[in-house]
Length: 344
Image 1 (tube, helix red, strand yellow):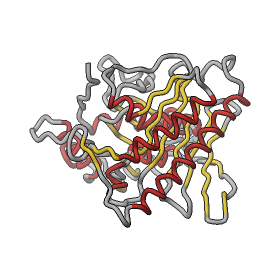
Image 2 (cartoon, helix red, strand yellow):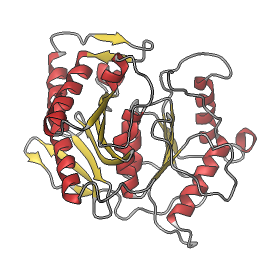
Image 3 (cartoon, rainbow, N blue to C red):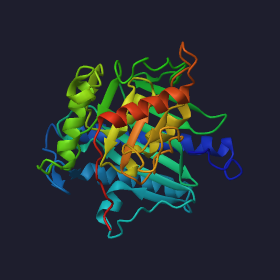
């Protein structure tokens, strides 16, 4: 996935977009924190979308409105794709075009928020030429007053972790500086992130059954499961694809294997991941890919994502990209193909 066309937006312009996204994410986060305080008096009302684990609350819709209004006030000619407005609309095709486009998930981890589990994130991504270029992810319930991950995807950009305490913001820290090599026998020794998702149909070939088998494969001892045992250090399922992605982007995990989520769940996280030196490919191996072909980046609207963290050259002289692509192929060997389609 190439860098966007530098002639369209200067670094200063991208910085302005980044700063706006950070500011509005914190405003939206304050709204969510207040909303949680109100829950001490009034139970949180939810509505089901697909099923009982696909929930929406008034807070989801309120946060999306806060973000949309703030962004379109400053950039009225930019396109805006938000989860809740997409879900409520009749058009279900992939809406991203090459023009400046914001892709927003007002609350990723709504089920977590309903249960007051803190893995909830506000995800604001900005695309140029259909490429995630600015990413801002704010976790309002982590840390004193929230934790913010952000990046500007540009040769002179950067990726940062900012924490907010009751006494104000702390100095932003660069993400993954420098990243260690991947484990020599990866996926052995890796930390693996994945979600069960909202598709809960129960039959042997269902996505749920395949995901469960994949998780067991990755956790099983080396050589087990007919050679598919991955012996990863651990499996983490946070209930938020956004948080899974930023933890891999920041080097706090090694692998994210996900399917069934949407572009607003991952757009901002992909911008951060790519800027730190990570890669994201299709979680299904392309049918015509040979063992020596370079692995293409994932289609943002493809609903399948396999992310590998950034790394440094290892003791054997293997480049970061060589290590990452080797690990991708090892994960593919241990996982079944998942079938998630976009509505027509």
